[in-house]
Length: 150
Image (cartoon, rainbow, N blue to C red; front, side):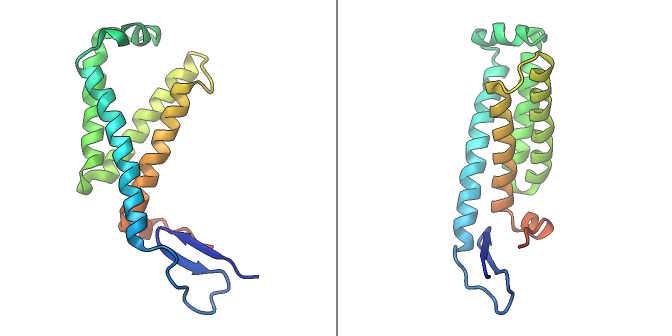
């Protein structure tokens, strides 16, 4: 039995008898990676701006998490730094690592508050997967470093 695996525009046959033809162009994978990355950047940028300007709407949620509302600009600065690093191609991997830590901390915070499976946890997990998925699809160096094999 023969099957095809296509990840990031690289098609592979399971029987390895001959090179597979391209099923999807690499540019399609790169475009999808850029779209995923832009979604992550826009959402986290909006969150960072809301934290930086200390929107009063956030006061109840921030204080319910156990953090003083006065720390909102600090959290916003951290978020903005991670987003800027992720958005720049030269520092995107560092930005993804920092975003993973930041989003993991947010997931842990909601676990501490006994909000297991809450919408904020799901959003953080989804953003983390989208950040790495987008980076994987748009950066051939990362695909070469972590190849998926059939």
